Image (tube, rainbow, N blue to C red; front, top):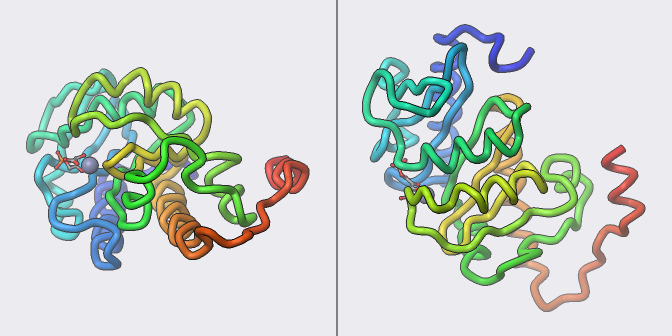
Length: 209
Ligand SMILES: O=C(O)[C@@H](O)C(=O)COP(=O)(O)O
Ligand SMILES: [Zn+2]
């Protein structure tokens, strides 16, 4: 079942539960990060300046199909970034933006190929590559074109000196992929400077077929 088939109340419950789970395990701190989910007629989104650990299901922002705020508290400042990712990946029903520690550390170090495809699970959850877009001030609409281009290359994108944005066909899928991205960033740090054996192109092809 895709998230769009789930009742609005169930999607609200999932946003609260999965956001708290991410927060409790250290994937976001303070009020960093934001989440959106496609619903009938538009999107639900976490409010701006809200902590992922303390959301309430009846206090989520409601947006229409065009990404305009129609009800609930003021949405995250990253509406345009989320809308760009939905545009790049029309099959997506949920998007997670985090500042998880190792991904954010890598986002401050490299411009491309920041996290190599070293394991099958990386390829299965994140694809062949995780592109990086240049730095933009958080909330800047100018990020739109770069996110559309990067999102077409894969479901996960690194934001230079900021964090990550990950799309999924369900919220659970987007959360799982975000967690895999952070685990892969940790691996990349552990292996830095060592002769790690990357997966071959044919091994990657086999995983993606
Ligand atoms: O980094 C930022 O400021 C935003 O990208 C963010 O993570 C939290 O912004 P809001 O969702 O507007 O609270
Ligand atoms: Zn952010």
